[in-house]
Image (cartoon, protein in one colour):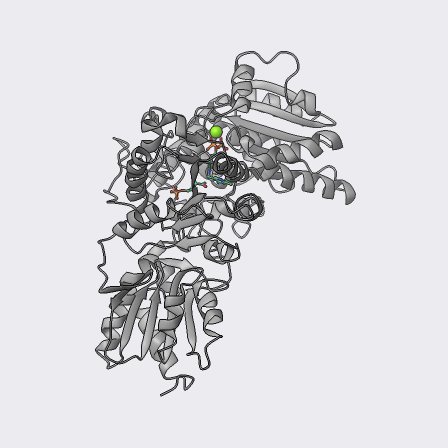
Length: 596
Ligand SMILES: Cc1ncc(C[n+]2csc(CCOP(=O)(O)OP(=O)(O)O)c2C)c(N)n1
Ligand SMILES: CC(=O)[C@@H](O)[C@H](O)COP(=O)(O)O
Ligand SMILES: [Mg+2]
């Protein structure tokens, strides 16, 4: 894209070489910033993405590219959701219109797009550790002239890894520039004593502070929207013979009044927007998150022992209503999943029933805490895993496709996968009623469809469709019950008898499911999770004890990282839609490996 509604971003189009940027005067830099904001608004209002975070770092990124060489130096963005201006300044303007679309630009740094992109991960609080490694490697390889610059937000600074890295970086005293982009927010205002300290520094920074006490030179606070002031601070910091932190104060959503005025999250991440009003371009309908939000709020009134925890995502995980109704029982711990899980263990030891609301992919950050601090002690903690399965536009580090494989390893943990809103409400209630160990309830990032009735229930297992012949058993995990039923109808029309069941409590595999499966010629499991270690794996292992177990085919996500795209497109690509399921069953039946 080389033109926007307000005309071609002439200066931005000309920034194809760093030298051009270095020669711009103040007036041109201001124009360049305006052009970048125009492209950000025009694009993200159409494609969705991270709006507030990127509007806030326009001047900071221009200054970065004027002081440092993104090709030879390493600019490491923490999380990376704020990399759009960097992408626009490194030759990707023409491709920017397909941001976060299948085959288009990633919404995070992507090494395949540019040599100037370093870290593709979108999980917070990792940048300082990467930087510690990079500076060490450059020193050992005689490349100490290559500068390493970290851009980290105040939110990412609440993550424990950030302080683990600060601990060794401060001691090593190797030069590094750390740009602290302090807008006072994660999604919501950043919580905790770190945030309080930063607020004090924003007001009066003279003297020692936590960074200088840990071996860093400190520069700031700097006006994060004045390129000249930022550039001066960067140049000063880059001359230091030890790590230097530049405290840049910015406004999340700068330059777009609806974002600056958004009290919830300054439009941290948005879907397609009406740019004039700042309202969603299309209605999203009822989401799984909204069903959970309503039910946990209801449960909170019934169960005074319920408390809820989130790692800086109270609203995105559906806890906002609960927090408003029960302010003393909802805890935002910052971007600190490990602390959230073990704090929940402490809350459970103290006689409460904690609910940890967390995106599936971010639970990976706290596996040891889940295993050892919660499950080993058989503590009644309930994990509500939103964004479970293929999420879509956020790409490989956001798809929640590992939770069933991980949770299946945890002794004493029970995992539920509701197929519809009624199932979520019921299974959430069942989960928070379990007292002898941890539970988990997982659901995807999509609209919550209509309820799917069961014909009968065998133990925890719902039978959704019965066939006259015991040919095929389709085991549907969660919302994939809908495409399974559609596939069964198509197969029935071709004379294949297909029974469809929903285990509801999917791990450990219920004995009733194993006993039922043993009666069929072919068992096919369908799950929005990695094929390795998912429900299919566990059911196959459970059937091994039967004298003549039927073949089990698993339709699931292959063991590789999935690129960004639409959820439906990625599910279709991996055979997790009605066509894919029906085709897989027919191929299995004709493979000769299924008893007649
Ligand atoms: C481990 C982990 N937990 C949660 C998130 C979700 N998340 C993405 S960005 C963000 C807030 C980041 O705040 P900050 O670092 O201050 O950046 P800003 O958006 O304010 O520029 C959160 C919580 C994440 N990416 N990684
Ligand atoms: C960068 C990050 O981790 C989140 O902001 C992520 O983009 C989740 O977005 P959704 O809440 O839209 O799934
Ligand atoms: Mg922030």
